[in-house]
Length: 337
Image (cartoon, rainbow, N blue to C red; front, side):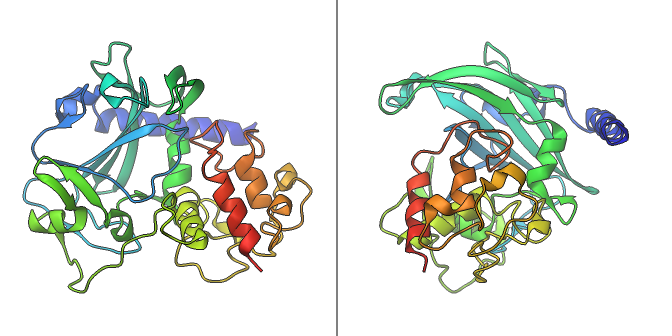
């Protein structure tokens, strides 16, 4: 009871602080010239990352807004150093029909990370039924919705908007809130701008949005669903983008000793023949996070395949299985000796 009371007090104080520091409506920030169409105003930069986090098959529209005349500083394995006043913007949406995107999208929520002097603050906005604006929300919400998938099958989903404390669980590094996506290796891909398709890093540097880009050629990242890359490369890329924000030193799962970032080279830290730490029924009665050559006996795959809230991983941002990714992780574990 005392723990619950403390959580409620923290939540109340956080909500009051965010009310004072943020707008009630998304439109008040003036990020978009066409808010429903997600067309940004001048100075708001759209971007994409190489391996997006799976969020129940939602599409995501990403943007960065930096103060006029300011620049970000390049980091390869870590988030760019963004200036104070930056806002990272991400809108989640389902297509009406995934076979024909011209039919439009249902916008669900827009998440902001706003860089203040005291650090990054998260805030979510939920779109109204008319899709004309989005209203600030602190306590989260479940949205019942549907869309037609690429096979022409109607899919129903209970999309969950996180509360502000849940935002912290994914974005926490050493107890400080940080962005996740825009780091060098994630951004080293092409994007279709109004001027045409260009490499994002080169575009940002040319337009004086990014400094300290290495002069030597930067290797392209492996793409998890591109079969031109090997199974291990693809699997590690997927786990890095979907799991490593928590499963890293200083992350919210940092005490597990199970780390999935691309730079992790230690087999035990990657879960190979590693016994779980306080997994409870999430272990499924299995001995190791990864049992080499035996995906069916590996806790990692078991939890990724589950939709039980007490078992599944990641714990947040999904209620569906990522059907295309599970065979990849299966094949990767099968190859491990």
